[in-house]
Image (cartoon, rainbow, N blue to C red):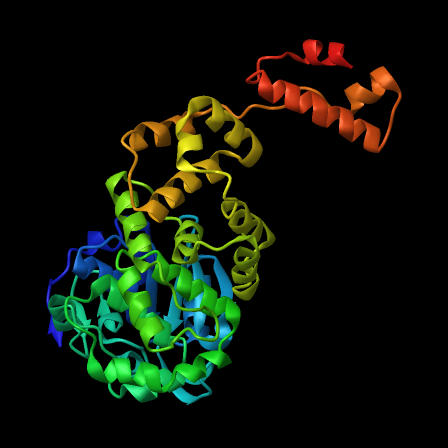
Amino acid sequence: MIRDNYLDIKKIADNPEIFKIFDIVRNCGGVIRFVGGAVRDAIAGRKSFDIDLSTDLSPEELLEACEDAGVKTVPIGLKFGTLGVLINGNVLEITSLRKDVSTDGRHAVVEFTDDWKEDASRRDLTINAVYADEKGNVFDYYDGISDLEKGLVRFIGDADQRIKEDYLRILRFFRFHSLFAKTKYDKKALKACVDNREGLEKISIERIRDELIKIILTPNAPKVFATMFENDILHNWLGKSEYLSNLQFLINMEEAYGLEPCYLRRFFVLYFPDKELAENIAVRLHMTKKQKEKMMKLADNSIGVENISEEKLRRKIIYQYGKEICFDKLLIESARKQVVPENMGQVLKAIENAKEDVFPVSGRDVIKLRQVEGAQVGAILDKLEKMWLDSDFSLSKEELLKQI
């Protein structure tokens, strides 16, 4: 189905430099179109950050066309038909039309084609198989626009077959349902996800983790996680949660105060783990060392809303843990109790604007005065630091050194 002049193309790309590639491909006898998320989001009235394009030129033909036009390219994944084209300092990913020859649930062996509908048929969901040219004409082969309008999230063709081509599509289905659904779950799609859930074990934990992060950052994450827990979709990675209402409370607070969603903060509220469980979750999901350390710091139960709300105690918490932990902990503990402090906005702003105090005495200062080393230096520093904290950060370096 073609819808002429259906879309204001500026909703996808407002940088005129991007459209140079359309002239380059056209001059080579090919066709190029925007595809996937950028088109879907533009139609749905959402802001999209990723621009992907498809062309009926082969990768070699596209590469030659760009070289002839003096445009630099990056070989992102030529084996899979994707070429990076540098336009105005940005890399545009352009993929040649493909059809699957064979799949194993993780990767596909593909052949290149010039059939746009065949390329669309290998995509996962109808709402992700919509193309648009530079004039705003939209090419919709599987009623993706209609499904967007209805809020229906469903697979293209046979749901079971689509999932077996890439088992990560199970989690993608739940993510897009959270973002776009206005109806109940498509029965065929949900059944196919449940029937094939063991196939997720074939997927690397990094891909699983990245998709879970995207899901938990959606506004309807609690409802979607509830469905996944009910159907044991995540049983190999995450246990069921008793805190879905707390997660919704946190999301409501983030929206109410205009805060950027934080996936670590949301994951923490999903379980309110102690330090051992926080570390376990981080290791299980292959989080970075820094992310693991943050999860474990958030598990410190000595940091409560009352402490953070009181200015002097808050300064000590910021000194010991940093502004980020203090900020997140206020939201987390409020979500735990499902109570928003009266001065929440004021305290959040105070944390953002707070100065991070720095202990003015170093080990070198101690050694210079006392000619001590090792554990003795540490013990002296600990005593001086306690004195400094008790003075509400008021003692100067000179005053502290006099104590030595």
